[in-house]
Image 1 (cartoon, one colour):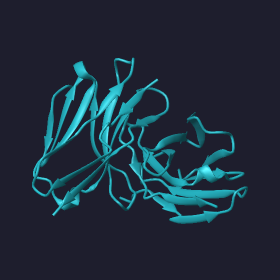
Image 2 (cartoon, one colour):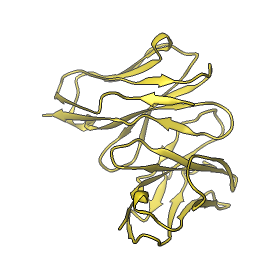
Image 3 (cartoon, helix red, strand yellow):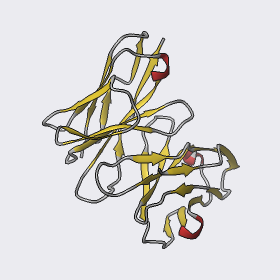
Length: 114
Length: 115
């Protein structure tokens, strides 16, 4: 069983630039969600995708957008990067077979905006 | 709105000591789920336990045990005979059923087990 994989591991960008983060979900999982974790904080929900549609969003501006592909992999795009976007971005997949099924997380992408 | 509070920011214990990590949650819903996750330095959040609001039975898994008390809205986590490998940040989390799975995490407790 393949777990959740994220790429890249680390990324450094300049304020104003755009970034794309990638995630492959765990085998058999068709739901993917993204979280932002600032240093010393708990993860904050960005949005969730189910069957290629966004079906839930947290308190993040529209410059945070995403995609889910037919193979259930996903991308997180952030436009017009700001210094406060520096964080660990975590992708999680889950199976809809069970209500509130546990999220399976990847190792994350650490984004630094300078 | 939901809220999860982990008042202990950092805890240090000597190996083989027992340690309890506190978690207090707030929600107006009667049906909800509580989780504990472990985040080692590698960054990946590792699922430890899931508990629904209708199941107040305490659970033990090896050196880990969980005490769920609805009366005090708490879901505390105890590690018995701690080991260095237990050093990590531990997160308590809450999720409401239905719709998308927006998980509300606490701010985490960093546990350091000293050899």
